[in-house]
Length: 109
Image (cartoon, rainbow, N blue to C red):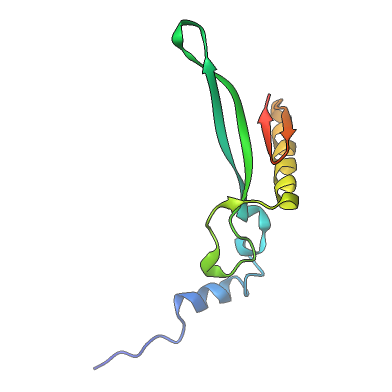
């Protein structure tokens, strides 16, 4: 006997669970934003490398993009990038971390 295809595909279940991306993580932009740290070094005493700075570059993972386009990291736009860096600075402040803004990235001092 042949089995019939299910009425709901995994995609349908996902859409139903998130109410068409209006609930859960698809609806919250914070899940779709992040930073990429880049550590810079300089020569130190005795030929050892010394950490000079860490640059934080804001990225977007495609919040509100079509489902098949989400998840691929890309540089955040100017407004979104500034908001990501400001939020990261606010979250870092209680740890005594100072962020120095330089155009599209910040540097940990």
